[in-house]
Length: 438
Image 1 (tube, rainbow, N blue to C red):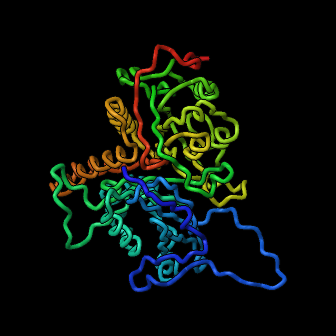
Image 2: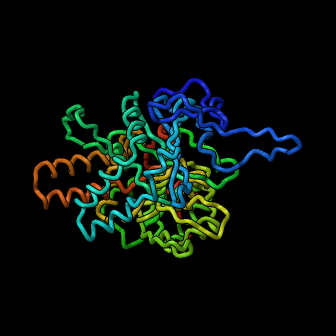
């Protein structure tokens, strides 16, 4: 993997001109105006999220672009602005011509699951494809990104709109993709380009910076599993660190002990969504409890990857009790405590598909270091090929089943650095001090 040799951060400033994503006005500047008012003391620099100054990591590969998504209000309606960063340039889609046709999107994966329950998965599939046509500037950016060497898209979405960025769709008319012997993935960007997420991490200056570094978590698997999710002969035990936790209390005990060593935290349990944060739960623990009461010193010490294999673990919720417009997620709590990467779900996912994904990921990491962003891309591509093949075959029943699998395959979001890899190894017999249950 090649990395950018010069500092991107030094070339990204809030008052620099941003390059528009539209070809006919690419020379316009959209930098923040400066007012020189005599006798007026300038306020200190704002500490909030600034989409035009994302403080990109110097170690991002040259083909990586960062898409910042910011909530706004336009013509009295909820709306959002787009900012695309690449190697010191900032392209924008935040002008009246962009906002006039844009409103609050209604294509979040939870909404599409509801639509499928009433009208079928094929209907949800079409709905999603059609929506992306209304973002022409974004589609132009996607075309440009796909032409880059080793393209990767990092998305920092600050909105509560649950836009499924992994399901970006762009199929250019008249430009058929190169034939893939494995099958056609259609125009689904997340099946051909690694799509990585980031979020505001509420830890001092980390809140306004894109801070991930390429990590190489290595070791055994620390497991919390609700007994309802137990699968005989799942082979996780070959790499398991200590005795499997079956309650969140046991898991908390293990994570508080910084002597517990592991490369991956695997959680298998129910996730229950609610717009009331106190009723939004992972296992039997609410989001405020996990965020404010838990200590995860072992996670901080190991920098391990985390797979939250439960429903809605990456779904955002707005907490009006705090002075912050940025929604909260379970994924953010683990990132705050030092997780090297987090994989979590954007909506409900079936137990069978959740198990299938975990098996694929762990099987790969047993053999060699697995790039997590690329592993998710391959997982999505598998399901996209199945869906496209079923649609082309004209078998309605087969297509409905394949498209349901497609949506389950795209439920997973990856938070971290595009270069992070995971390696599993069998731990020494009960070597870690936190290996026994309390």
